[in-house]
Amino acid sequence: MKYIMALLFFISSLAAFNFNISDSTITNGRTAIIIFDKEKSVNYEKLVVGKRSYRVFNHPLNSKKMYALLPVSYYKKPTTQKVEVFYKKSNKKLSKTLFFKIEDGKYPKETIEVQKSKVNPKSKEVKQRTAKEYAEAMKIYGTVTPKNYVRSKYIVPMDSKITSSFGKARIYNSTLNGYHSGTDFRAKIGTPIIASNDGKVVLAQNRFYSGNSIIVDHGQGIYTCYYHMSEFSVKEGDMVRKGEVIGLSGDTGRITGPHLHFSARVGGLQVDPLQLITLLNENLY
Image (cartoon, rainbow, N blue to C red; front, top):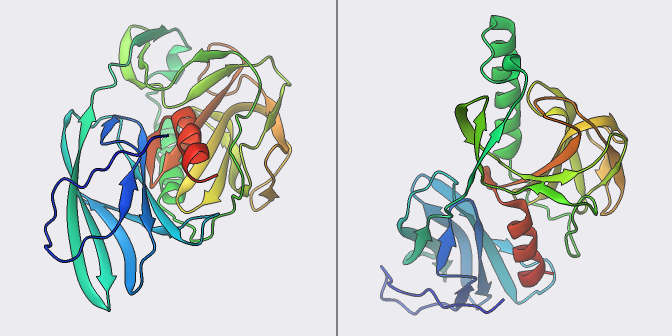
């Protein structure tokens, strides 16, 4: 991927450091990457975007580089986004500011017909369950493991036709109800699902909406998720290798038929999983 310099404006007038950003324009729901050149006496710490911050990590394969991922929320409106880069130079705290543009992905809509009980459940028990499952998931996604488990390119979890892409506005039974937060792969019940890369299984349980679900922590704030499974081949706490079978596809949870829903989180934000894989493979591995 061709790097585009995004050094548009600096708060500090002190000596500039060297970095490249994958693109100066980012679509909502997608991710950018900033690559820093390591420099003597310079310690990069974090990027701050509004109320969110993202750590800067060592490049997994190049000891002379560091990197930070910059996810953009699906709900972010087109704007010029300010990013503050905080770092230390000779133990002096400094910051610089850059700007990039956020554009609208203009995602299409799709209509889904599912069981009425899965659209807007009314029972107290179901509401308590979904709230508990949501809180558990957000606690996981909000955890940034400093270690990077990954040392090679990411892969997709199965070789199958994509039946629904990321970002489509979802209309369930004539009611707009969010967006498609991942990529769906066609898969009859019992099709093997493989890990997209090395990591640690941090969740393997049945959930109301996503059915039998697995979440893999790849380290440094990157997670991949595998939903609607029929069987698990791993359990929470297991370390998995890229390409290892972690379970079988199914039709559990809120679905119209058997398939695999594959999604990803970066820094707690839901992002396009296939765009993320391409970004990481082209820039880090």
